[in-house]
Amino acid sequence: MKRLCFLLPAPLLLLGLLLLTAQTSKPMPLEQTLREYRWKKRVLLLAAPTAEQADFKAQKALLAAEKAGMAARDFVVLEVFYNQLSTTDQQFLTKKTGVSPPAFAAVLIGKDGGVKERSSHPIQTAILFGTVDKMPMRREEMRQK
Image (cartoon, rainbow, N blue to C red; front, side, top):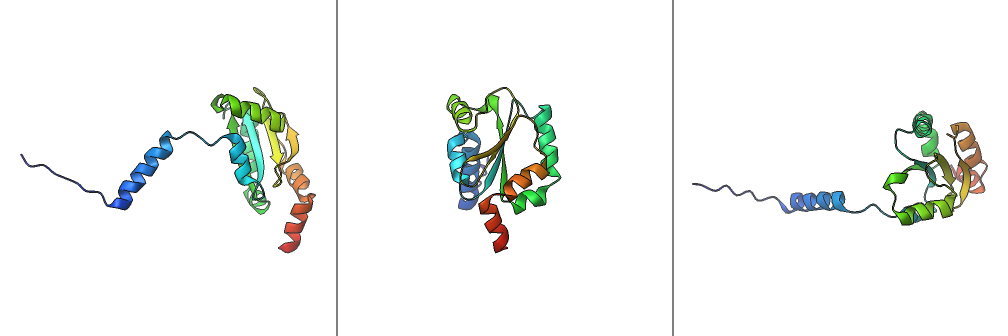
């Protein structure tokens, strides 16, 4: 009986190991995730019990219609589902944003890491953009462009 032996090129083997590691690694803590975006992006944190929650779906639909406006304002949307958060992340979420399960929440976090707006209902993009466009950092960004 003949044996077949397949040797994978090193880059493919490394890619496979990275994918396997990525699938089994824990998500980054919420506090660290927000720290990574500080001074780089504005964060719209959407917190909900599940992705099927009505207000969560409505907010996502509003944002989907305004991709260009979101990109122009350096937004990143961070989706947080309560049942997927560690106890530490839940405590941080409540302490940092005032949000706690099980209610929907949309929280605008500025590039400086501060909470700029919080709502228990979907935020209309005109209101969201108006809030951001009044910020001194955003005004400076618009002057530079």
